[in-house]
Amino acid sequence: MSTPIPTRLTIVYRSTDAENGKPRPHFYGKDLALASILRAAEALPTQPRLVFLNDGVLPAERLALMRRHGHVRRIVGGSNRATFRTAVARQAALCTGDRELVWFAEDDYLYRPDALSSLMAAATAFPEADYFALYGSDALDTASPWHRPAVRPEPGAEGDPDARAAGSVQWFRAQSTTSTFGVRARALRADAALLRRMPFAGGAWDTATCLALQGYLPFPRPDLLPQSDGVTARTLIRAAVRIAADVGAAARLGGRRVLVGADPELVHHMEVHDGRTRTSPSAATLSTDWRRTAEETRAWAVDRAFVIAG
Image 1 (cartoon, rainbow, N blue to C red):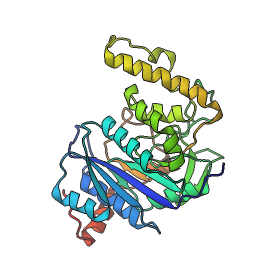
Image 2: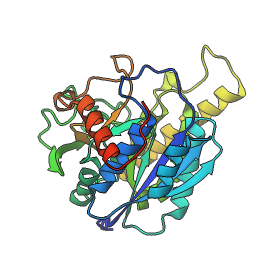
Image 3: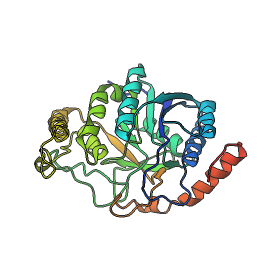
Image 4: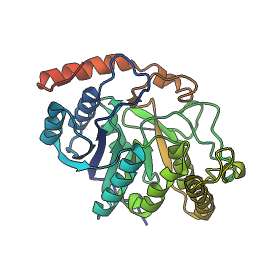
């Protein structure tokens, strides 16, 4: 079955009124994050459909901006896991055609203005790809066995003879990304149950999800059953989900999904990163001046009379 060229982009933007204790760069702000994705959307030849799923009460100015640009829905989540599961279930039910690309977005990412146009270019250029990452430089070693997935020593597209250009960046086979990602409508409908189940796996469930979708074993045997935290209802559920994910990965050997990533990264997770919070980005990503992107986004927003706090 051929893959239809996407003609429509739907952005599902999850936002919350809560903040966590993660260290942030000085330019961080949820108003800035929102403005940056609107700026990237403006660069598209066909405007996307924006759906804002809000958990909690947002500032009035931000909410008004969302209403000017898309459809706003209030949801009750209470956690990233809960709102992600709601977003996937809702959009999978609404995706009835195959020419739609869905971008799931969190509210603390800064977008380059060419981010979404490059995403759509990749979706057109690479019909074999099912999932798309604009963040993350971990490159999948496609020669690694399914039961022992490995990351290439070079990040991103570096040293990868199979990397290809689309939009303004190179694209490579990615090992994983976060819960900010793109997916074709057909794959979303087929994978919705797995996507909604994997957050209960605990730990780095977004990485585990990406591995399972690509037919790689997400959990080695020692990580399957409860250990030091004892046997509780929660750990038993986690174990059941992990075992099911491993079994499902084995069953996918004939129908693996393909995840491609952008190099340089086109979105920036606005956290202060070190070796504990993420692996080393590619050289092209490291050369991106995100402070300048933030300043230019702020100026773009001011020109349009958007209210940007901070």
